Length: 220
View (cartoon, rainbow, N blue to C red):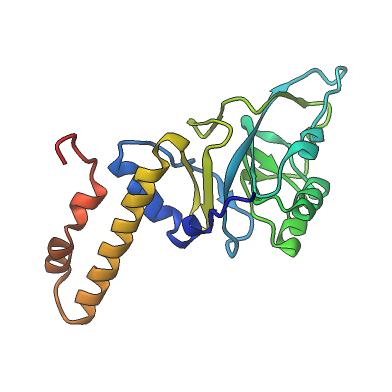
């Protein structure tokens, strides 16, 4: 049965980032931005790690995609390497056809127009034309990886929108979701009070906004 994670895309990564802060968790994959700012995604991480190889020792680049289930987010750890790509238009076309939720790359992608044309969520550090074939190969699949220093385990929740990508560990999903809901409610209250003519200071104090964003103590 497909899991419905659509509620996460209603918050925005900024709200989820604040909710992660309230739990003392660093989940922002900084520097990974969308190719198309109009799309968003939420799904379980399907993780892949790459390693450098010799040009005389060719390896596999994208065969893992056959095993990625619909609704998952492909998480590619290429150690932030911007010198060659690990994702292009053929993978985009295949992933879109399979119903994959999106792709996040700590590294580079190419053929980005195909992702825009298909409305496929694609996030990376940079875009380039230079292939990763004969430069990198897949070393690990469905093992813990890193996105901009944030650890990602297979099955962790990945959410992306126009501001970037956040990682929510499975063990704290319920707490982060509850915090995100409370932050959303507080922000709606603040906006309503501002429309009524209240000052920002008063509106924030009445909504206890700072407390919601700060790390909660054990006594809370």
